[in-house]
Image 1 (tube, rainbow, N blue to C red):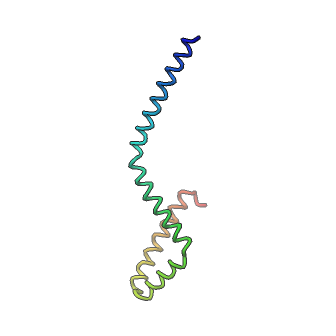
Image 2 (image 1 turned 90 degrees about the vertical axis):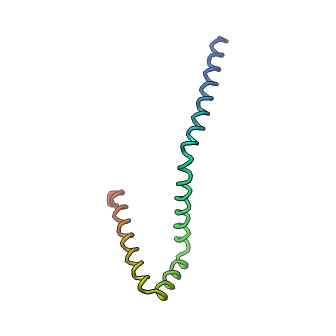
Image 3 (image 1 turned 90 degrees about the horizontal axis):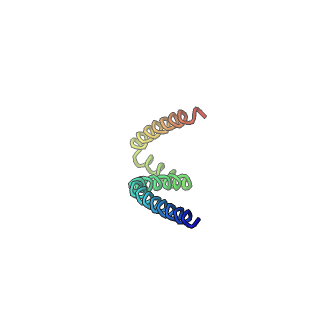
Amino acid sequence: MNEHLLELARRHGALKARIDAQRVELAQHARPLAAAFGVADKAVDGVDWLKHNPVVVGAAVAVLAILKPARAWRWAKRGIFVWRGWKKVKNSLTGGR
Protein backbone atom coordinates (compact mmCIF):
# COMPACT_ATOMS: atom_id res chain seq x y z
CA MET A 1 0.00 0.00 0.00
CA ASN A 2 2.82 2.43 0.83
CA GLU A 3 4.42 1.75 -2.57
CA HIS A 4 1.17 2.68 -4.27
CA LEU A 5 0.87 5.92 -2.27
CA LEU A 6 4.48 6.82 -3.03
CA GLU A 7 3.91 6.22 -6.74
CA LEU A 8 0.79 8.40 -6.65
CA ALA A 9 2.68 11.17 -4.84
CA ARG A 10 5.51 10.97 -7.41
CA ARG A 11 3.06 11.16 -10.33
CA HIS A 12 1.22 14.02 -8.64
CA GLY A 13 4.46 15.97 -8.26
CA ALA A 14 5.44 15.30 -11.88
CA LEU A 15 2.03 16.48 -13.09
CA LYS A 16 2.22 19.64 -10.99
CA ALA A 17 5.67 20.41 -12.42
CA ARG A 18 4.35 19.86 -15.95
CA ILE A 19 1.38 22.14 -15.28
CA ASP A 20 3.67 24.87 -13.94
CA ALA A 21 5.86 24.63 -17.05
CA GLN A 22 2.80 24.86 -19.28
CA ARG A 23 1.57 27.94 -17.41
CA VAL A 24 4.91 29.66 -17.95
CA GLU A 25 4.85 28.75 -21.64
CA LEU A 26 1.27 29.96 -22.03
CA ALA A 27 2.14 33.26 -20.33
CA GLN A 28 5.02 33.75 -22.77
CA HIS A 29 2.80 33.06 -25.77
CA ALA A 30 0.04 35.34 -24.47
CA ARG A 31 2.32 38.32 -23.80
CA PRO A 32 1.82 39.89 -27.28
CA LEU A 33 -1.93 39.52 -26.90
CA ALA A 34 -1.87 41.43 -23.63
CA ALA A 35 -0.60 44.55 -25.42
CA ALA A 36 -3.31 44.28 -28.08
CA PHE A 37 -6.01 43.76 -25.47
CA GLY A 38 -4.66 46.76 -23.56
CA VAL A 39 -5.12 48.96 -26.64
CA ALA A 40 -8.62 47.56 -27.19
CA ASP A 41 -9.50 48.22 -23.54
CA LYS A 42 -8.38 51.84 -23.89
CA ALA A 43 -10.52 52.22 -27.02
CA VAL A 44 -13.56 50.79 -25.24
CA ASP A 45 -12.91 53.10 -22.29
CA GLY A 46 -12.78 56.05 -24.69
CA VAL A 47 -16.08 55.08 -26.29
CA ASP A 48 -17.64 54.68 -22.82
CA TRP A 49 -16.38 58.15 -21.88
CA LEU A 50 -17.90 59.60 -25.04
CA LYS A 51 -21.22 57.88 -24.28
CA HIS A 52 -21.27 59.35 -20.77
CA ASN A 53 -20.23 62.85 -21.88
CA PRO A 54 -22.45 63.71 -24.87
CA VAL A 55 -22.35 67.44 -24.06
CA VAL A 56 -18.61 67.53 -24.72
CA VAL A 57 -19.07 65.73 -28.02
CA GLY A 58 -21.92 68.05 -29.02
CA ALA A 59 -19.89 71.13 -28.12
CA ALA A 60 -16.91 69.90 -30.14
CA VAL A 61 -19.14 69.23 -33.15
CA ALA A 62 -20.78 72.65 -32.82
CA VAL A 63 -17.41 74.41 -32.64
CA LEU A 64 -16.17 72.49 -35.66
CA ALA A 65 -19.33 73.31 -37.62
CA ILE A 66 -19.04 77.01 -36.81
CA LEU A 67 -15.31 77.36 -37.47
CA LYS A 68 -14.94 75.01 -40.44
CA PRO A 69 -18.34 74.19 -41.99
CA ALA A 70 -16.89 72.53 -45.11
CA ARG A 71 -14.68 70.27 -43.02
CA ALA A 72 -17.59 69.49 -40.67
CA TRP A 73 -19.76 68.51 -43.64
CA ARG A 74 -16.99 66.28 -45.04
CA TRP A 75 -16.53 64.54 -41.68
CA ALA A 76 -20.30 64.16 -41.29
CA LYS A 77 -20.47 62.35 -44.63
CA ARG A 78 -17.60 60.08 -43.59
CA GLY A 79 -19.27 59.42 -40.26
CA ILE A 80 -22.54 58.46 -41.91
CA PHE A 81 -20.67 56.16 -44.28
CA VAL A 82 -18.87 54.45 -41.38
CA TRP A 83 -22.07 54.23 -39.33
CA ARG A 84 -23.98 52.59 -42.21
CA GLY A 85 -21.14 50.15 -42.78
CA TRP A 86 -21.07 49.28 -39.09
CA LYS A 87 -24.84 48.70 -39.08
CA LYS A 88 -24.56 46.36 -42.10
CA VAL A 89 -21.75 44.37 -40.47
CA LYS A 90 -23.61 44.22 -37.17
CA ASN A 91 -26.83 43.07 -38.85
CA SER A 92 -25.02 40.40 -40.85
CA LEU A 93 -23.29 39.10 -37.71
CA THR A 94 -26.44 39.04 -35.61
CA GLY A 95 -28.68 37.66 -38.34
CA GLY A 96 -30.64 40.86 -38.91
CA ARG A 97 -31.88 41.34 -35.35
